Image (cartoon, rainbow, N blue to C red; front, side):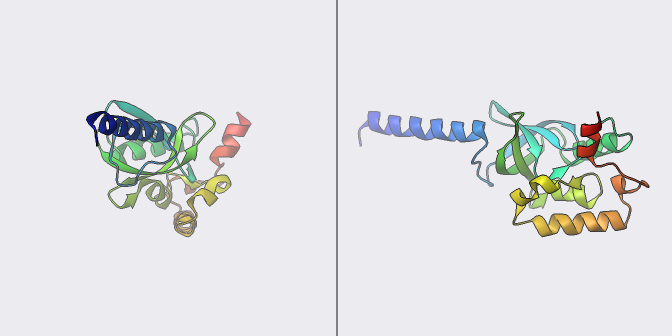
Length: 169
């Protein structure tokens, strides 16, 4: 192969991987990203090299920041689980209407999305749960246990679901 052919092939491969990274359509699970920041209980910004990607945690919904004190607690817990500089992996599902990549975020083999539900810091998002078909049962069981144990968000008499809270605003 001539040098120019090798260069073109490498350029195409790099361009395609860049497109996949930016579009969020296909990011390999074994690709490591670094946490830049967390915004609330279900939104994190990660980077790989010089590229940044805003992630909406898939299949869950965290209380809104204005849902005191639950929103702030959820945000604080996500910040503890994903501190700045933490290495994470993604299972990308799609892109939302705000342009964020929707993904399950993993620290090692632990799904951060699932952990938030287990701890009562987020709830299952029924409208999008089919996107997590392989882990759907785990999410539903985790939520049922958190509810039963009245953990986090579930430790209130009549919890208002985050999507209902947003609709009421």
